Amino acid sequence: MSAPLSDVGTECRLRPQLVVRGLRVTAARERQRELVREVSFDLSAGETMAIVGESGSGKSMTARSIVGLLPSGVSAHGSVTFAGESLLGARPRVLRSIRGARIALLLQDPFAVLNPVQTVREHILESLPTQVRRNRALAREQVEDRLQEVGLSYDRVGASYPFQLSGGMRQRVALAAALARDPELLIADEPTTALDVSAQADVLGLLRSLTQRRGMALLLITHDLRVALSASDRVLVMYAGTILERGPAPALMRAPRHPYTLGLLLAEPPVSHFVERLRSAPGDATSTAEPLAGCAFAARCRWRASECVATRPSLRAVGEGRESACLRIGRIAGEMQAELAAPSGGSPPIAPGNAPPICRFEAVSKRYRTRELFGRAREAQAVREVSFEVGADESVGLVGETGSGKTTLARCLLGLTRPDSGRITLGAHDVTDYRRLSSGERTRVRQLVQVVFQDPYGSLNPALTTRATLGEAIRHRRDGTGGADVEQLLSLVGLPAWSATRRPVALSGGERQRVAIARAVAVAPQLLVCDEPVASLDVSVQAQILELLRDIRRRLGTSLLFITHDLSVVRQMTDRIVVLHRGQVVESGATARVLDAPTHPYTVQLIHAATQLAG
Image (cartoon, rainbow, N blue to C red; front, side, top):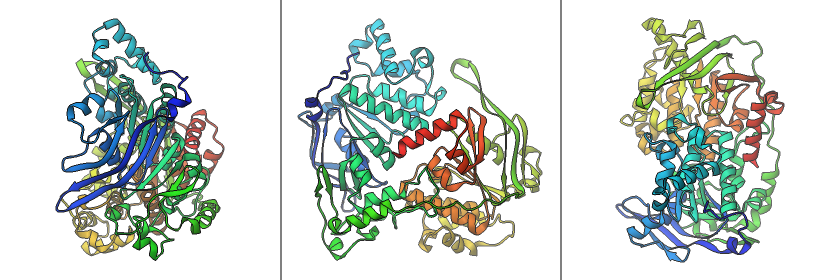
């Protein structure tokens, strides 16, 4: 292989590979709007730097500016130099010659990036240099080497198509293709967001090892501070287009030097213990996209003073290798450290003892039969002999990696697919096969169970206002109440009255998910199925939504079937968990008992991966 080996010296590590100075990104609409303001940083060969922040912070715009991939109507100003060559204002031909060859991109969703009608071998092959592709023997050798470098076997996956691979394997294929031409810089934009906890840990570990062995620079873009701290040497924290803090990852984890960074740390749900109240910064990051003359974070900061509103702070040194844009950090650092160190644990609420089950799965099995390309048939066992129940006023978590069968069970419960064998009951109704239910029975069942999906934008009708969406749901309530309850539902999920007139596109991700939850509880269901309801949300918004679901459960007595791959979330949200592996239940029991003293090797593996990410 032509990749550099592990003897990359200190001189290589200290040489700046990427130099960004005074980067500004503006959007020309009715008036020019700044999306990124005065961003500067260096990135050396062999070094990993993470840019972390909530949606709208400007982190992806910063990355796109580097490689000239900004959307139409958006322009970059300042200076971006890569290996001594200026990139801002470079001709498209020059940028095309650099992208893929010297600067590679690894994006969030590998399934969207990979061509569904190309095999893994073909993906890697087309990414290799032309002279290599012309030599059949050398090309085969290079494809094998590239797959082996990311932990995949050519014999096992070379002839496979993307849809035949797990999420983690698809991301490894995308990484192998990105590295096929031995780039000097890899920009990874949310590379683990769509992956389960084990795949996250594997991909992050792989990125670190490849960066160190190749002497390649890695720029990691993420909204997950746990990922940033576990996978990078330095962290740059952005908010509303500005840098608020930067420094070495270990130091930032031990002692944050900006209230926003502290807020991100406190909002992370711990995997080790239950927290009585999940923390989040007040307000919404999207509302501060155009800050006033002062600090961008002032509106959400509990320590703000008049000087914070009047003066825009700039980064200044607050220790060796540390910089902060907080005007008051010298006076509040002690309070921040005390808050970070304060014990946050508590005792989870006592689950009902012998509550009658609202939902029961009995030996449920499901196989999927598909016809692949060129007519080949394929069968996959999604779930096998799965049995468990959810009691009244109980929260049960379904935990497992992608492909473990979690969502298949939820689809069977909701009537979106039928199990091949077994029995599912909901209240007094047998819902194993919805086709056998009368029209009236189906209506009653739909009132008993509702669902909150992962993507609120995809689950809401984009043409309907919030009022119309909730009004439509209210008309199906068992008590037949009318549209006057819209305001009560908005209040229940913490949305302002003005949101009733807004369509989904005008709401933030957190606001859309609140609308989706309001619609689900509008019919007063006894069971709420939550299918990864916070997986795509920023950490602060995630904390708000989880607290909202807790509050709804307390106030309405609604049972939860909580589907997630995040053990930190399941610790905070459930009384019992059911661990699934390859379609089978491998362990179940009280949440605290299973997470504190697992008995199955697969559960131990999941907890180990989650602990690694948590630092």
